[in-house]
Image 1: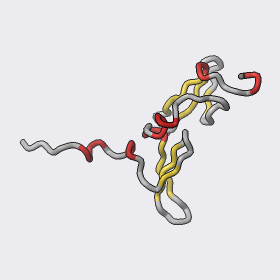
Image 2: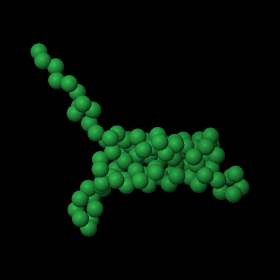
Image 3: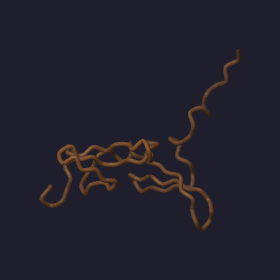
Image 4: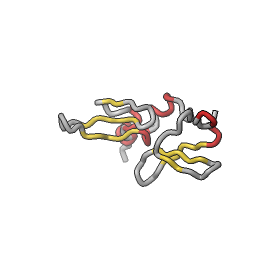
Length: 97
């Protein structure tokens, strides 16, 4: 309910910013944009968000110097590179000419 500060899903769209590779939210009614997920916005399901490479960022852990991965939609973190970030070229079969 908007009166309680909630977002109506049909008013908001989740879009990819090509410059940063991060998702942002666009209100079709007010033309407002925000990096922060609107309160009450359901949008993508967690399953879709986990498999969307645009939602993941590689981050350096300052205390260990190791890299980890953060999903900006689900707030999940992982030391292991998510499968959706693996290069499809690694799965190609070599063709002999």
